[in-house]
Length: 279
Image (tube, rainbow, N blue to C red; front, top):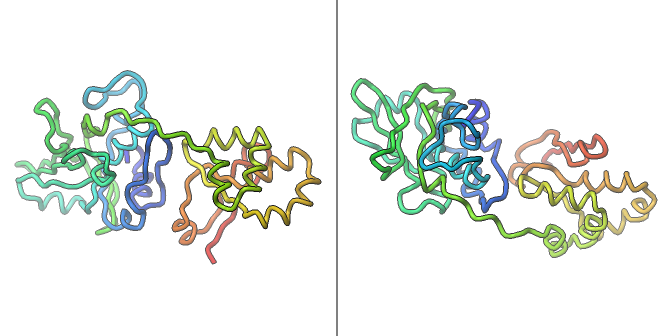
């Protein structure tokens, strides 16, 4: 995670995830990823996606795509536990550590491994495995946060350079939400979404960043239709948007957490939030 240390820690713990299009997958099961992680946090000025900052290997002008940024971030999450104490106990030989980029399946060969080396004087460096001679390693600065044998956040001097992680990611195949919902016993609800242009456009404009739709089955929609037909157009739109959250929530997350989430109705037409709790 690149940026605020607390955000990085939350991401490592499985509470915050980066979602979106650009051919992106969720490579690691949150339950597995939560166990042992070391998150390398680079200086904010070096974060990928910013226009006027030093960039990694062979960067092109402008922003990286969301899919490429995800790969760069995955390269900075080591699938093992390293804290300040463990780094200082390393031998002078390089230790190869697997990252989430390696586990994603997008890293060719050993491109998703990071070599961690302790040098004379206690200096610790990180560099992508098989990096070109022109690539300079980043160095360990300090420990930001640590939950022993669970996850840690370590500040490093810059962004790890990897042409494989920085490579363009093919755009995802188009997703038709109404077709997907229709095939999952939600044909009636999908029809209502498609019939409301504002709702349809809002959902399609959100799905490539992060979206969770709570879809009532056909029987539930049929039971509610007498009330729904008597609502104003604005209220109908609000009800439909209330069933969509502009973030990704898995069943595992919902079963193990409780709280309030913002729906698409919150900012669009009415202040409609969800409060959820596992039963």
